[in-house]
Amino acid sequence: MSPNPPHALPSAPVAAPAPGNDSHLRQLSPLLVWAVVFADIGTSIYYVPGILYAEPSVRDLAPFFVATALLGFVLLASKYTEICWRNPDGGGVVTIASQAFSPTWGAFGGLLICVDYFLTAAISTVSGLQYLGSVFPVLSEHVVWFAVLTLGVLAVVNIIGIRESATLSLFMALLALVVDLVVIVIVFVSATPEQWAAVKHTAMLAKDIDLSTFLIGFGGAWLAFSGLESISQLSPAMRLPIKKTAARGMVLVVATIFATVPILTLFAISLLSADVKLHESERFLSELAFVGGGAPIKIAVVVSASALLLFAANTAIIGCYHVFMALSERHFMPSGILVRSRRFRTPHIAILIATVMPMVVIVMTLGEMKLLGDLYAFGLLGAFVLSSAGLDMVRWREGQRGWVFWLGLFTTLLVYVAWTVNLFHKKDATIFGVFTVGAGMLLAIGTHQKWFTDWMYQLPFMRRRAESSIEDHAEGLELSEKVELLSLSQAEAIAPLYPSGTLVALRSHNPQLLSEAIARERGRGGVNLYALFVEERTGLFVGSDKPQIDREAAEALNQATKVAEREGFNLIPVCTVSYNAVEGIVRAADALGVSAVMVGVSSRSAIYHLLRGHVVNGLTKRLPNNVRLFLIS
Image 1: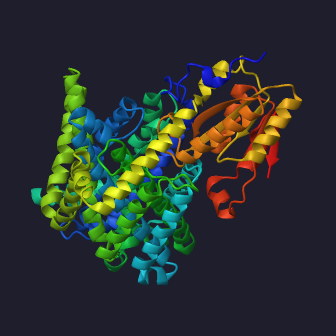
Image 2: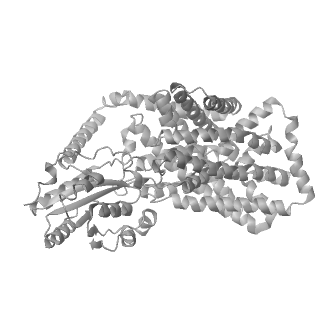
Image 3: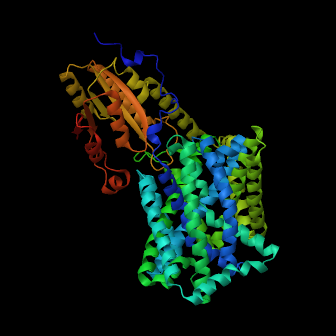
């Protein structure tokens, strides 16, 4: 006699995971943490020297200001490392500001970082195309429209979903670092005595600087370290212990920034002619490479710079839409932002907003790098200030009063000074930032306080839509409650009571697949069948291990349960989260001890398989030899 069916078990729908059982999501080693952060922060060297030089009061003093801002960068980097391990589920400035002050301040921080992401995507896209424009001039001549088109392509790519990014980040970061170091070495070797004299002259210019010029240059130079905040979003994907992984990754980031950014800035400002610095400010590094190593080295810089910059633009889009989702989950943004594409299961509305806003910024600024850089400073430094001050407040409440606390307070003061200077000196950026964040805060507070909901519910059309939506949601809840889902750890615990040799991977209702699986298991003399749903979270920001089952998945599992019951079988519905569907299926097969995995064959496009990975090919390579793979068309 078979055991009682699973629906008689006291287990509830997927519960919050116990600490540590999301380790399969934590793929980032210190090296990969470095790669992801350096692939973002390392792009600044391609455009910051030119933006600083374009500031009339800075000009040839740019290397000095980058060097002075390095002190603040190191101090702030140590605080971001602590933010990582204090918040293992990520969230960055949103989480730390909420903890330190209030959820509303967290929403404010989230909007600041979104402005930062908007400008990161915009400036990285324009800069990448400007570097390509040194080889293909048509791109520079029509940079605005090519940038908009590029962001449109990135929107499509993200809606389809990128399966993995960390390994690609490592390749891109290593490529950029190697090319940067090659340029430095070539300039060192080939520089003439006259060029070394120019370098020395530039390095000595700082002795005659006044306070006003220092503050303007110091505030602007922080742009060289944009991307530092991205490490705080990676906590959910870092290997345990997070404290060690984040610290080692950040040490690598700081070391590589020290080895490249100040030296390349000094060489570019010192060795490029005044005419080049005036007319080619968008691509200083490729022009420096041409001076030191000729056309081949210039081409290498163009290729690595454009690739890394466009990759950074994509990373900014990913980070931005994850912040939108975090704000929506905290009820500071409309719930519609969380809606996922039925085909690709990605948050397509959030992705579209995260790409349309940079497009608008590029069109409004006509792709001018100096203006984009000015706008960039508002959100970047604002997020830095709020993150740093938030950590100070948390430390204060814990009773910390030692040198670490006071050094952290000094760090906050440095960043606050830089932000304040930019607020007064770059008025266009201040107007843009205040308007954008102000509108966002109005939307956030209005959403949180239900202002807009109450107003819109007065409109007959919106009331009918709301009532229909509520009815559909109620039906969805009723449907999901009919299926008691087990997490993979729960299913593994009861596997000895419900032995089965067959695991069915489901995405939607597939009667043929279920019939074949039941026939196979019946032939083995079994009466139990495992049905697995993998919630695939693309990109690096995978979040927690708690699955979120949509209506389609709940319907598929509910129908599968009914089919199994009609055949006299116990179907155990299992759900897990993974960055990769193949990884989730392989892990489930191992945990449940099955001898066969059965999947349906889809007819998805080649582009989909390129971006998301081909499940069948992945299973063929990764399933153990003792587990057979069955494909059901």
